[in-house]
Image (cartoon, rainbow over all chains, first blue to last red; front, top):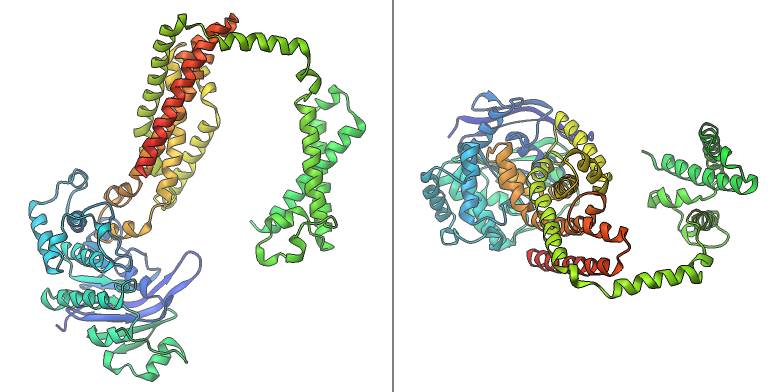
Length: 256
Length: 341
């Protein structure tokens, strides 16, 4: 529980248009924790997650994943890292025209040769596993329905199953509940917690609602204008910290 | 590019154009003088320069020119100035340009009510119409054979163009060609395709009829080349408009370049691709009916033969066959595309 899986040192990201999204962020992620990142829109949360699995290239600093710097690796090494870090998104990012099962199988793309995958030939065990993960997130019965016919919450659960199919060590969640209604919101967060506790997968999750942070996070960090402004226990976020992170005069909104 | 640069260029060209027309009207130069390119280019260049100075001076004295109205971003526009009115400089500029251009157009196309109402010419046209209106269906069987050839020219041109255009389209999509070398390839291919497309299929048919000989093969190759260029552009525009979300989703699983294209992009673009392809086939059928005029085979070859001999009833029959088939293809393709939405 105490060994460090990810160590971020002085991470910087400047976009080609000159926007400095991250200005030297440093923190550690412990194996098995449920780390939540909070901060205003535009504070650099999404950029941070995308720098970890290299959907974006950091412009400075180090990302040590199991003691190996992955901030500057290229080509197949990047794909290898992405395999080990599943990711879910605010807008689910499923392939609408494919079935739920087919979407989950896409989690195996990194493990399948290009030629085989183009012909739809996946490891036979992968299908069994995909169905098992669908059961785990409670939608095994929907396996053969087209993904775009599911509700938002169900689509996000398919996305979780797809990420699990990668057999990841870390699960990155970028605002996983921001486009869901409050009730569905808790269902999805509950499944994330289940994944965290039962499968022991480390979770790094961007969130907006502090009430959810207090309920689900084991630890929390806060970003403001691309800098780390808070790191600690979610229950210790008080009025004062809240104003530091969100600015004076901001009011907390509660889900449910 | 700043808007003030675009504005100055636009206004300079407009002013130079008006001045040039005025010069031609008042000096009425001889044909020899009109053909003296070096002198004329120099003159045009000087006039654009003068226009440029006028434009800058007008802008300095805060007069609103037409270029300002068109190119200035909305927060720089004074709403009271953008309303049309007789006191506005830019309104005068717009109407003057339009009026002068219409007058030049009448002059250039030798527009003449006298020719249009000339009784001799009109009687000739009526004779021709009578011939066309009483088609000679004696050549109908031959016309049918030739229209079948025409349909297959269009079909083969489209079918052969699909795989080429499909592969090219991904290299012509900006959102896929993100790396520096990728972008260079993108720019190169786009240019080649734009040039290929701007040369009409009829002209390609002339080239191919020399290369492979007059006949349907030349016509098919010409239409095919034009289709590759058009389809690749249309396909790549669809690809550029895809939703980025699934691409990110697939890349995050550790998928490679081809896997990302196949699983994240292809499912999003396949239906619009098919719709555009059917539409292209429809266009190709129409083009194939006239590609024979320049040696590309099909029913056009027959048409030009009878037209040359002024056998109007036979031409009438061919036109009936062409119209029927084009109408049929057009309707069928419209229904198919509607169903695919």
